[in-house]
Length: 106
Image (cartoon, rainbow, N blue to C red):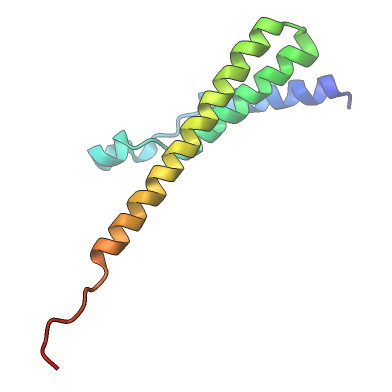
């Protein structure tokens, strides 16, 4: 396969994955429905990166590639920020639920 065919295949697969519904758990609760799903954003990141590569390799459209490269960076920033905030929240939750020092006299 040529690089152009590989990029076209990746573009096709990831663009199809982006259109698949990924919010099945949204009916469980409001908090789950409002929480960003990292799997969805990772699929968006991959699709946007594939579009950027497709624009460079197959179409030779610098503006399409530039716009999708910016969108790819924004998706990456969103994923990293969300993961960082979730880890921070988990740490705060863990420290607040940890047992404190015993107040019983010795």
